[in-house]
Length: 359
Image 1 (cartoon, rainbow, N blue to C red):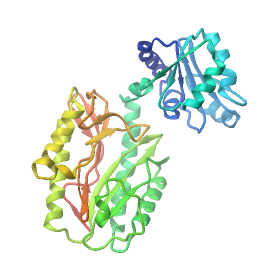
Image 2 (image 1 turned 180 degrees about the vertical axis):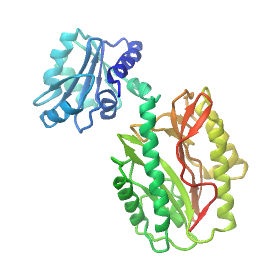
Image 3 (image 1 turned 90 degrees about the vertical axis):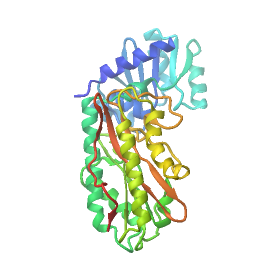
Image 4 (image 1 turned 45 degrees about the horizontal axis):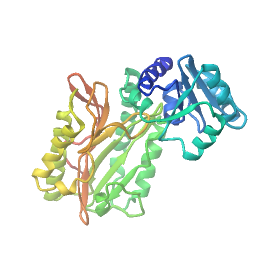
């Protein structure tokens, strides 16, 4: 069972470096991580004396069922109506604010109600704790990966001439939900033919044709945790060039996965995969980072990128997703989720990828 109080205690340890007395958590994903609550309006006040969860009357019953590790306070109109009392009771004089989620307007309104309290921008306090996954989180991630793997295998029989990108994306989403996903991690990306060269593509009415590469990027959520899977297939027999570039991307992914270890930098891991593609003359056609962390959000720390400042630690969970994109021709990307272990890396997914699938 999730120990939300322990998570809050680790966040407060990280807050110590800011000299703040308390942290007001307004990022809904962070609130979920620290309390178990999911909904569209919630805040959490973390102080040395404990945690207080805030929301409005719409979520009173839901909070009672879900919130763990915090006292619950339901306000009628606005957080600023009740927050001063709680801060004064806790003796807070310097309050940390999550810079990435609170607007300037919200900060001004809050400041007007808290004249004797200094408000301090903070970044990454909760996210730094969230980054390293515990055994329960990894089990949720594994199930999310299984759901996307199953949906991809199921979809292979449906990738035929005439199927549209939009229809295939919808089919994948419905399949993942029917199989037990809470939601999708993001709207599925399906790009056929020249659209497969779009790194991020919005599915259209473009129908697959013989000879088309079809790039599918998809993910399921299970208990809030995300999977992220990309596979590229071809409708009908592949050309020699399609097979060659697929093998190149697969080699790059393999090199990236092998480079993952405790203590490896995000720059180093990215470079191992990128060097494979660059050496083959396609460096300019790999226009994104090798990977990113994944958990309750589809993009989290750490980053595997040419500009990453991250060093990998045990139980980091990252994607490894090299690609080669040739506008006017097509693109190939292969992506899996990997857990950093003391012995290197564990690939969570098992969707087929050993060779270019020809449908």
